[in-house]
Amino acid sequence: MKINKLLHLICLSGSLILGSCSDDDDGPITNQIQEPATYVFERDGESSVSFGGQTTRIAMSEEIIAGLNTNTFTEAQLDAMFAHVEGESNFSDTDLNASNKSVRSKTAASRDYFFSNTTDANAIKAEFDGWIKDQVDEVFDNWTTEASEGVAGFLEEGGTELSIRYISAKGLEYNQAFGKSLIGALMTDQALNNYLSTSVLDEADNVENNNNGVVAEGKNYTTMEHKWDEAYGYLYGAAPNPATPNVNILNYDGDDSFLSRYISRVEEDPDFAGIAAEIFDAFKLGRAAIVAKEYTIRDQQAAIIKEKVSEVIAIRAVYYLQQGKNLVERTVVDYAAAFHDLSEGYGFIYSLQFTRNPNTDAPYFTRTEVLELLDQLMGATNGLWNVTPDTLQSISETIATKFSFTVAQAESAN
Image 1 (cartoon, rainbow, N blue to C red):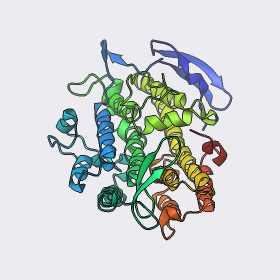
Image 2 (image 1 turned 180 degrees about the vertical axis):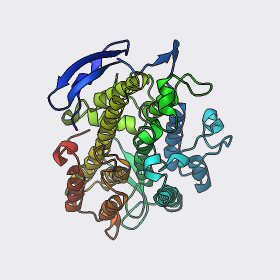
Image 3 (image 1 turned 60 degrees about the vertical axis):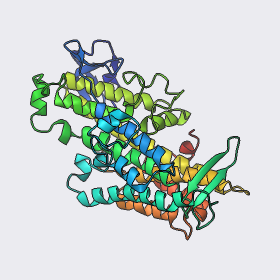
Image 4 (image 1 turned 90 degrees about the vertical axis):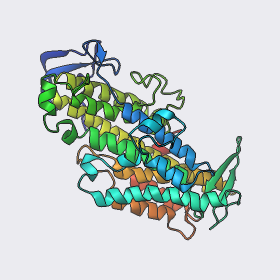
């Protein structure tokens, strides 16, 4: 996809410049929006940016992941955290308990992918429910059992820092599968396939209201502005300073365990340096385009975000498959380390079904294709215990060929 670099001009005001210039490929451009330096937008001297619901769901997700690695939790407790009901004491944070938000309600719930596809939406939610149940029934019940082929329990990971991994009978860390799959089913699906969708941005009278500066009732933003901000929040809602989330992108300090973390990981690889800025800059310019009522430019920026976030997920899927492959090829295999990487890879493969190819408006991999890849990964008699390097290489190549990177490039990430 060609990105018109002339759109990426920097100024502080975010004002609209009217002029005329041309591009040999894209034709004349009559409206250029000067990109703001930060994700700061105001109306009447007050911020018009709001994504509190996204920050809340990220925080809820963090506690759910922690709970999945705490064997004192019951299935009922974990289910209640996932499908939180306002006022229930499911979390350690009282603000989360008071919230009317939940993670489960927004899992596989985008307008474009699941509004008319309740069969897949329900199946995906059931898979998350199943990982919770299996973690409790299979892994928690064998917390003090040393794992082996066909036997759930714990494994000690070697290296400079000893880690304990708790795995299923087939070697899968359900907590890792759940967490990395949530990156796709919640954060990516909601950002790319819901809030950045024209069906949501332009719904009902959103365009007319945005054109006329009509704000949502009791708010300081137009509905269109807010929808764009909500997509932004699924990436940057936990950042210490969401206006400039990339300031310490190469010294990541753990804003969250989801998209923000893995954009940072991909950015650290010289093969993909600059991807973090591409995503952030597209969010800024797209938001400025909404303010300037320039919807073609808005949609161009949405396309960049969809392409690059999807790429991050694919790169991490291949990275973890390759890390696992390198470990299982060793003469003495550290199964705990290998299964940890492959469990993360499992989640990123699962997340591929929520990606968005801006050229087709469809995922880079369908749900059927994703399930086939996961069957290849886990399909041996004892799952990851028996997976071969050739299988891991084959899955890696299948993923990379849908994107503009190679297996070797993805393998060298951190």
